[in-house]
Image (tube, rainbow, N blue to C red; front, side, top):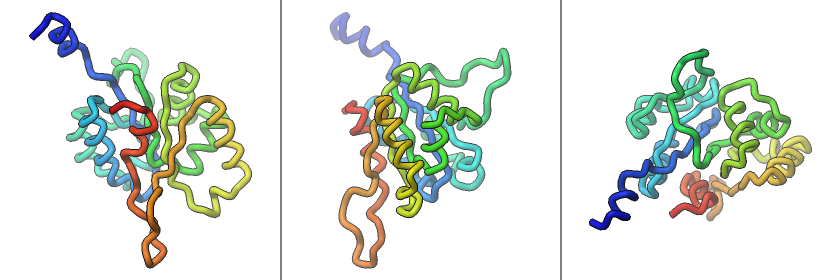
Length: 183
């Protein structure tokens, strides 16, 4: 192995923050973590308080990341459990989180992390999980415009064929990674 290759092997992998909101599909966020690891990312999960209470398989997520799920602020003097992010994925992103984030409200660790990451210029990819009626609300549309203006990248997690019964296709977790452009 060349000296250059050895140096590359010793460099830490880029770190991905996965922000998870309270939506039914959140139970499958492990799929995103697995795909991220396959693409060379280490990952840590930051969940909204509502997501932690019944929307996540915490044991599965912690086993896949090798780290605890974060949902609360750390206390002064407590060490940082994650390194600084190289990128952030918000999936699933709910109506509430998108609107609060766009308004600069940082009343949870998840929202504070998103506000800070945007301010630092960290690449952020979002897969919304918002009911059609809520997506039609003017505040939501304005929030998307504001966040896109900040450089946030949005994708459609449901791109694909609608089922014969009108059901949506599976949530496309990997699309968030595609938005970040890391293969």
